Image 1 (spheres, helix red, strand yellow):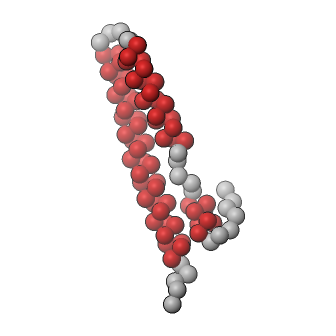
Image 2 (cartoon, helix red, strand yellow):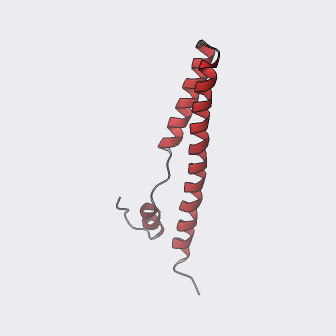
Length: 86
């Protein structure tokens, strides 16, 4: 017998996994930007290299925030092959 709830169960697992990975990355990103900001101003002046590192860390963090996983509604709709409503 084929289990009709398997796609939904897989979708729930997938969204939980993606959200967990995203949340861990979000925390790491915040730490990275704050840490780089503290390092940049710790010696009393802001050098070009320090500023470049801070900008790169901020851009990577911003990109990570934009990659936030879709909501569970979208994943469930995809699992049921219907049009998602957000």
